[in-house]
Image: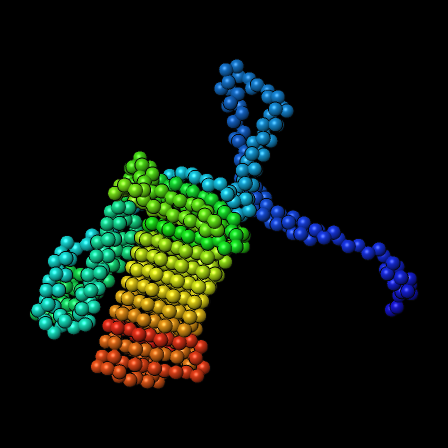
Amino acid sequence: MKEKNRIKLKKGLQGLPEYSPPDKVWSEINEQLDIQQNDAPLHKAIAELPAYDPPSTLWDSIEAELPNGKVRQLNPTRANYSKWLVAASIAMLMGAGFWFMNGNGFSSKEIVSFSYDTQAAFEGEREEDNADEMIAMVVGEVQQVQHQWEAPETVALKSSLDKIRSSIKEFKVAGEKLGMNQSMHKQLTDMYNKRNKIVRALAAKI
Amino acid sequence: MKKQFQLLLGFALLLPLGAFAQKTVEVVTKSIQKSMPFEIGSEIIIDGQKADVYMSTWDKNRIAVYLDIVASHPDKAQAEADLENMDYELEKKGAKIYIKNFVKDGVEKTASQMEAKYTIILPASCPVNLSNVFGSAQVRDLSNALVVDAAYCTLKLTNLRGRIDINTSFGDIEGHDIVGQVSINSSWTDMKLSQAGGDWKMNSSQGVIKIDASSSFANFDITADQSEIYIEKPAVGLFNYEFISSLSEVNLPQELQFQQRTISQNVQEIKLVSPSAKGSFRIKNDYGKIVVFPLGN
């Protein structure tokens, strides 16, 4: 079906005034979208805030406990003002929190705060009391086997053993200075295992 | 006699594990937070002591730093007092940003268990220089340059690009999706690498290196002593292999036709060249082990 006023319509459309948006319009829209996006978690969190209704008997109980049994009527304007002030403060604090978390308002100022907690502590493993004695015994036994003692592989193993034993000592000193946490206990256990692997490789030369 | 001795030793040095007894400690934390603008030429230099460092990126031109200094002790007052013994610096000198935590001069020992926890969020292109002892570091998504100097420290590195230089002793490295010019000097360090790319130059002493070759198409140039190197799940025809093994155990899959040549009494050369290779393993290992796992395992 053909539009009867096609030519008039076309002319009319062609005659419509052209409009170019100002240069900044897209960047402003983007900024607005960013603000909305950044504020979205705030609005969501506010919407999710729990609402608590006091028990219905609460006000009666309060009134009964007052000396003359009367509740002083607050000036309605002042009461509303206080309520709005508290609400505004909470909203501002939450807004600042989200703003900060989003990284937009990251404080360039150094902020220092303290916090306290109670946690389970771990006591680490104890090294076998006779480890040094056993290592000395193995080294002594290898030394008896002259051709093994001077073999390049044994020399490399002895050098590694010396290194890891001195590293274990260094590690323990640091542990005593700053305290051993769970991760350090794990590292120390790994070091013991690596040391023991070398001792076993040396023992295999006997 | 020998067997008896080894048996005795096996029992004596088997595992120095003990039960982890639990008790409660008071944990006092001093938290510091600051952000700085990221400029062209900015570099972040971290010097941690017993620190757990977590580093990630965002698309903002700022570097945000959270630092927690933590003291744990059964007595809260003692923990509070010890917290003063560990100090920090967080400052910008020119384009460089320095962050460090340290035990104050003159402090011989703390009664509390001390540690520092860093969370640093920065632009991906910001170069990072990280030193740490007795702790851990998790670094992800950097695209420019990373230098790590670590001792007694576990490293978890994910999605890194660019130039990466790592020096480490007594630590573990878990690396995933690292592509670039990578240099690793390590001793007593175990490594697990997957999705590696680019050129890797590694020096390893007394370490265990495991490379997932099903996803890693890099050129590995590894010089090692007393180390174990495992090439896991190598894709068929996609790698060139060149091993020089000196008194090392070498296990190769039968499916691949390696060429073996004895260079001297204890030195072997093992080669395999594939025309379609996308990566290579050049390995020299003394007194260690090289294992190429069966294909697809």
